[in-house]
Length: 289
Image (tube, rainbow, N blue to C red):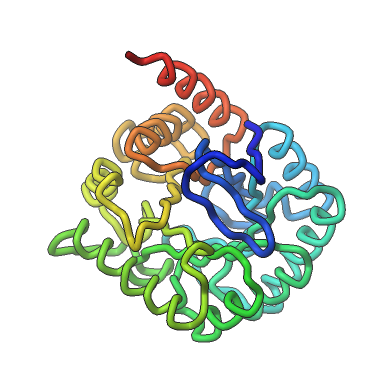
């Protein structure tokens, strides 16, 4: 799926450093975990050369963004040091930036890692903590003019799925996103540099996840676009008892459901299949009377 970065069509845009990513058509973010313990593909891309090869493969398959993560945030995972996270991610980012002009995202909660990644060539910071884990994160993002993904999470990865509870998951997630977005604005991050993520699977029960996904069209924090990260998530297995590597169908169902509700950015493992399903579905939709 090719995205025209200088499209003149009317629609929402995402400012990323000195570029504009227009969201008139779906944008795919390919997941590149350079970790030994991620829930779906841990250990597959620890070697930087294999990681870069996989990134370039995803670009060929239709990814506009490659999201590089060096710390697993699966339920029950423990934090790692800045030193370890940097050692896993920076060589990959440097090598990928030298070989491709694809947008590169760093998936981190740590300002020091974000800063090192941006210096190495990253364009976007994907922060699951929405600035809560590191008080310097907003400052680093603001100073770099990087794109920023702000996500909702209840608790921390280590304990977030122990017993998540909400009075109203829709109201609480929406309120959180607006609150943290406003904090980011006060810290100097431009509104058009921010994308919001409701955080499917991060401190939510099965019912919470399904309710959020069924009501994505109701989320409009300060008018900013949404990102969906539901690929291979455990809620799919809770429904059909599938293993993580057997959830392609469920992942694609989540993508189409979100697309119908206005989401245009999708963080996925299976880039080729997601690109195809969005291309075909979009083509069909254009011929609707």
